[in-house]
Length: 400
Image (cartoon, rainbow, N blue to C red; front, side, top):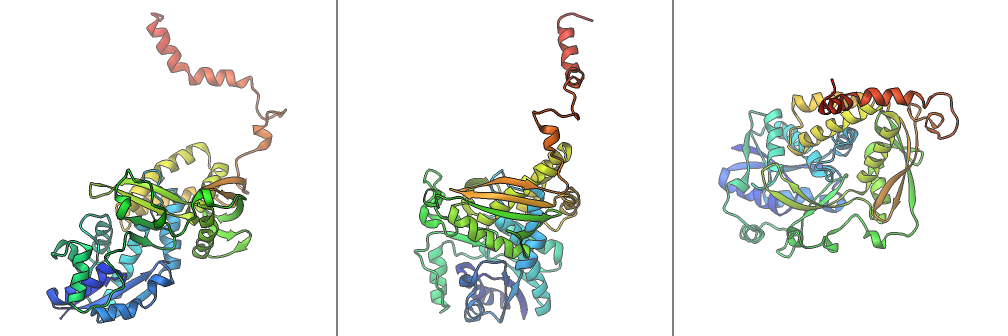
């Protein structure tokens, strides 16, 4: 009998996929759950739910530390933000989930990988690109591209017909994806771009107008671009992000309402909440301002754009991504220091900076008297910098 490893979440789609696979593929289904920080509520009883749906076995793999250290932090250190707004929370999680699924599937002796991604989204590309890179011998099964179930109601009726218990209902409004870094919301009133973001969709952040009237300052310490301490207390990066979520959320930090270009060609609207990530990205940017020279910082902006597209497009396990990361890691070698970010009414703003490698010098930048910079030297510099324009103007004027 064929053995199939399913990327399982316990939600409506994957609950329906288990009995569908057994019925239509005559196979044993092994459910693989990756814990990337989606929370105890979402993971509670997930193994029992999978077994009750017909899975042969279900495993939950703790990926929180690896997720942050090896997937989130490289993206943050790159400075990557897709289309200037999206901090890539879902995109970063897909490759590690696929990797854990492949590893578990091999232990179970599986010959096929299955996922619950729809045929319209980006995640099908991300999962299947990872399968191709990590387990090219595996068959790929994407039920949404095969079955005749087309709606939430269809899925609920199918589960009822198969006597599979579910906590889902036809009245659920939003489709969500949650991990330690963020939570995304789609569907319902969000699909109409003329509608303002519905307040009932938010889960991690307070409305900025109802946030505390007193700002809160938070200190983040970095070593080589990686966060190592929060308010002076040493801790692992994944725990630091968890705590930053609790700090930024009440202040309304990290809300994004975005109409983005999906890889598959259509536009979609999503509401994102990334409170801790927004603080962390702002802090690292503040450190870069102090440490990186002009050419390196401007080159790093190009790297950030390229790396964002690689992550968004599901190209994690590629030589191109590894090459970009090697360059990014080099630019972060001296990103060591302490940054203080102020959280207030939906904003996270760097207000204090220091680093043993800082290039900023108050002595050089001051408007007061100093001996390093001779203002008379500016005349020759400007004349040489503008020489091409001067020559062009002389030519237009008929001068030789």
